[in-house]
Length: 120
Image (tube, rainbow, N blue to C red; front, side):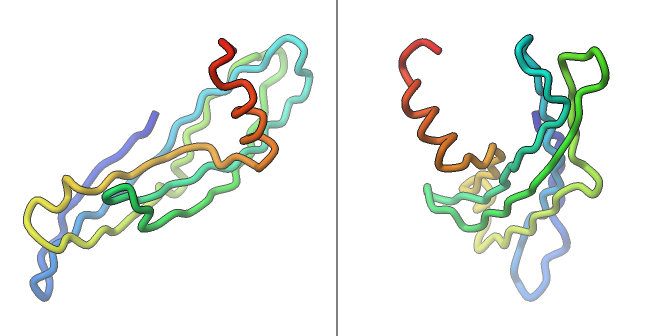
């Protein structure tokens, strides 16, 4: 999930912009065979327009499962992520996407590609 808000600051020098504040929320579940309490992961936030990546930033994160718990919820909002997007013309804000996802290592990507479409 993503908790987010958008603000449209005053126009300066004829340039409109939107400021996006966001805090990603991740839910992790530990399987019965996993005894590791620590979760290390990296996620990214990117701005895309017309399928072109205009900005991408990675965020390393870590959390732990509490004792005897198989689920943990992480909300990364300290501080929230702030993105300032210039808007070259009226209604340009509808052309932009802000995407959040897990940054995979080459090994994780290969694993996912091997199992894609196999019902797993």
